[in-house]
Length: 93
Length: 474
Image (cartoon, rainbow over all chains, first blue to last red; front, side):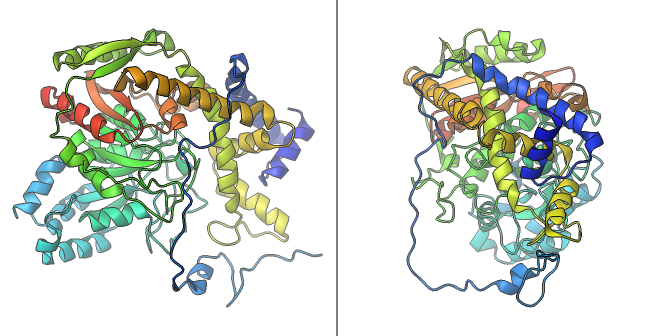
């Protein structure tokens, strides 16, 4: 993985790293991918990918009214909010 | 005191819930191993009084009057829940997980929340933002992870039961390293609602106790159908405590051919060989099985788990809850919040997951890993046509020194070699102490077919009736 690829990856994951940290991060990732690449030695032809070990249930519930307005409870958790909104820095310059 | 004695003492009024709770809290407050993230003295004493004042109502419940510690991955209403991370170090959930609610309902008293690897990513409890946990047998060694605090809590006799979660071995490996019993149920037996997600298709909560009896009672409390978790099983849950008394007869137990070639330490192998003879003495038949695919689980796991983690952890952005790094624009806010809020291991796994899911790499990694997962499931299904359960060591090694991760991170990942296959296939497995070498415990595990928790608990219990490994304390 070169510097530009790592920079893209860090941006995709929204994780900041200084350029001086890149060699160490690359080393760690390469190490793990060496382990993962052992998959290439397996014969997987014809195997259907499995994304969940058990069949999924389709969950439904009665259409009952519940107290779902917990706005204040959730806004209280926010690092910054006003009475009705989560606050973030200016998005449009 | 083990769980059974503790519950009996409450039911016979030899000790009140409040007395049991105060005794446990005293030990929490004197803990030198960094086992706990929060101590809940006030709420615990109040809850214990309520149970004592309503003795008749609670006395026959599965966990009546017993103090419990929950892994800090379970959301608890109005009580700090950190998941071992700086990202959630200030998080006070507005609701409780189904697991902790079920345990409350079953008559237990939550006294503390236990330390853990950050977001359950680790096998040594060293990735926690709140510092590493020491192993009660030797505090310079790790207790295992990610549920290391919960395992150490029971091993150190602070509580007789605790909860954990197991995505790649995070209950069974610390149970083995701390010398206690721990179970990962079938995927879907226990609700994941309110359990902070790491890898949603493998995460499963389960019990820790000194013995299979305690695990059975705690699993009775934890397991329930829950409409809030769409992967939660709708089948009727059996009573696991009652299942301990059932007679399942002589079993065919699968023993993996050439397992010694997987790099298992000789002391662990010796304990394993001894347990095989105990199983034969109990009338079971050992059948050698070919499972050469076993070691392939690890490469698949380190694609699927990071992939799901990168998706699950994308919610932590510094806007709605959790840690925020204040910045002048939104992009910087996301980037700095996540780089400052997550630890190195978590960031590494997010990057791996983001990479394997990105355009151009999906087929090479994620799809292939899911095919390996299918291969694993198919293989287990074949094996369970011939045997009732599989017996193998839980780990390659006994408890190891802290900081091993720095010298060889892949060695740490390989530590989960024997536990990961059950997670990939969604099968139940139980680890129990099966030997003692170098002044440290050794663990062995049974893996069973889907929803055969009753058989696993029963068989482990029968072994514990004729052995004493589970009675040893640090």
